[in-house]
Length: 435
Image (cartoon, rainbow, N blue to C red; front, side, top):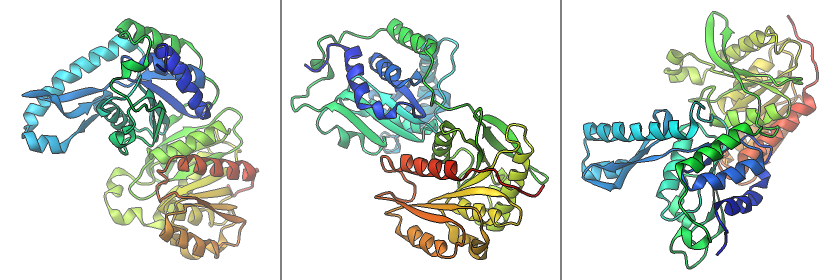
């Protein structure tokens, strides 16, 4: 026996999750039993609480066999192997999904009332249940959260079988469990009180959490905006905290966009440090279909420069120093744009970038530049070292140990965020630039 009840389990679990306090976190409980546990975690972390509604899509002639799962907002995850094995037609799948989505939407209305689902894009999401048995529901929940734009997923439970990590695979970025007993037979055997959680308790947990202010650190909300780049209008999101000390413009990599979950994760960390951020699409939808454009450094640098000019005319950013954060090929665009005379860029950070693509522009970059590379991203690390040797400005190469190109390893993206935050806050002094 480890826990008095689910609330007790939540309080114990919250102690293991203290390091997430003050971060850009959303806590999601799996209904119904996971919600009281999650409520204690959310309160301890000062984080918003919501339910993660998941509905298994059962094979029509064998409902206990899942062929996928659905979540809110039209999100669905399909098990293609099961679909092929049982030969379910697209029409049959659509009928099952229509029926189950009606149930899902009904439960959402019952639990939340008029409240909107918590936004997950670019955030760390802590998925909480009262325990893991087979792991199928938890896996589906993590996949749904990922499909809704979560940048990082932490699955946290009070108790699970000893092989639970193997059951979950790579669906969560981090797995946290208080107890993994050898004699695991069922979740309930480790609770003194494991009585069923009813809908009213779920509704009460969510309503109480909605009435409770979250702690500082959840981050200001961004403003969807239209960024003018010459004659083009590009979609973007501008976030400027009160008393911001500067604004960082993000240049995403090839195949990405303003919705890059990794860039949004870093942006949230910068917002908490009092820095504004602008994430925008460097290309229009039509342009992005031509792969040549995503590697056209001159084109992307021009868009970045135009967006910077637009930003400096906005009342919320007027007079603030501007920095660049470039990821992958976006790093080359950031360095090239900063190399232009009169650009007035205060600082640059590259995440897993390709600064080598900036070529002859590197020696004329004046802005202090931080190059962040994963220790296991060996080819890109070599390219960054060679590019660094051509920089004449203040610069530093920071290697995140054991990280690969996308910084997907536990704690890697947090290290990127901390490095970027410190670099920008140290170098975001007002600078002059040409009108």
